[in-house]
Image (cartoon, rainbow, N blue to C red; front, side, top):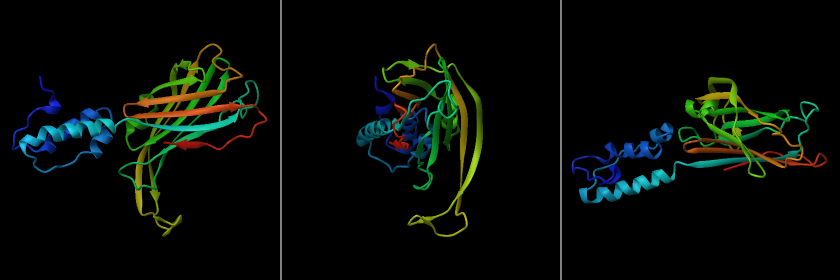
Length: 240
């Protein structure tokens, strides 16, 4: 049986009436990409339509899954000490958007606190034009240590969703060209706390911890590496 992707199309049927379905299937859980990648095409001879549709399907399906990483090295956290000693460095992943100017990046930041030896709390702040992607409750989340042990959160607390509008200026050679905003950008900001509870989940000799967040088409990985207290803290490094 022929699949929907390779069915013969009538000679009078435009491919642009069919490709959005391919896009929605290849990125079916990412409506933003399905919207921004929709394209209008010209008529294609019937004998070439099958080939064009298969190529489009492969190209789109291969471009939907992306992973971003943020990594930092810091001194080991200390339980039962000051709030600063129990709190990790904040990390961020800054992403652009096809419908925003290249220089406009939306920041997705995370830090965590050692509440007790059995409980860790991760504070997340997500920004995206798509409300679903900005919502912390719509992600599949876990943490993993340097030995590959995984833990899933018991829940999410203090969840808030807020629409935010920001004005931006044109930048030329790192300097604003004028004092007036040239355009307005509106996005959603989602905040929440992931709480992980398990007996002895925090180990004083822990050398690495990674928070993994996944949605179809997206994966964020935030990694902390820990060194002895007398080592110098490093600045955050975020990379694609």
